Length: 381
Picture (spheres, rainbow, N blue to C red):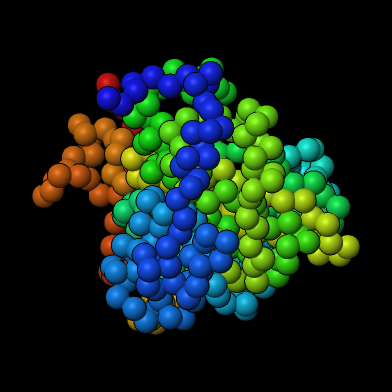
């Protein structure tokens, strides 16, 4: 019989080791180019030519039943990565000049440069760059494979400078950001649920040989049920340090992993490489994202660019809309925002698509989104 409540004192390293005995079998991942250190590596060019639903099935299996991590080699082109990197570097300079440099979770202060809410900041500063970057088809492919539609993107830029120390082992949002005392208040089925509410990802914005400290992972560790209560215990940390895997990455590679996977950013032992990654936290429509994002502002800023780029039928318009606009209808005020003709009212994403289909003027979208926001308020009660 499954346990209903989990206790930190019941976490035993021996139980984790039993889970880790499972090995990644290449036969289970026919679309992968190879298995390296337990991790399936996919060639972006190849999987773009395969049946997307079959690829998604394999990716979902890898993230759940498998090692909990996949690498998509060459997922982003160098040109779009370089243009985005330039904008990220300007954000970091602006933060330093303003005296608002940000810190990192699970790392010593000053080790990293961090840009919070880089998603919205990029959309406002450089909408053309944002559109080119987030039109990426493989980002949408894996997000839909793990979370389904109406997912919500957030992004944080993380730079570990030469000599900068990395992170300690941890699990990620949601329960990974709670103390053991708080996490233990949630029943076991919520511990299992937490990992399917979020997809963690990272896009390499430079080449990352091992000496630069690309992220350390413990494949298959996401399947250990008491993991959210165990990762702070010293014996688990020691095992992680001794047994993790660390994959070198090239610029444009993308890593996606189950947030329950034991992992930690590595220390940068290089002399001159500023290791930059765009960390993607992708949230289920049924969960809560970690960051507040002004998606109306993003959509209105991006709309003129999307009107122009939408003339190109090959451009990933829906992928950009998914990255900037709210795609889920709830919560709302159903007295005013009624689901006429269906089960759910229009979303922000629906309005952006309608505006593009009908070629609305720029100010018409702003007005429609403002009216949409008013309908969702409860100030008429």
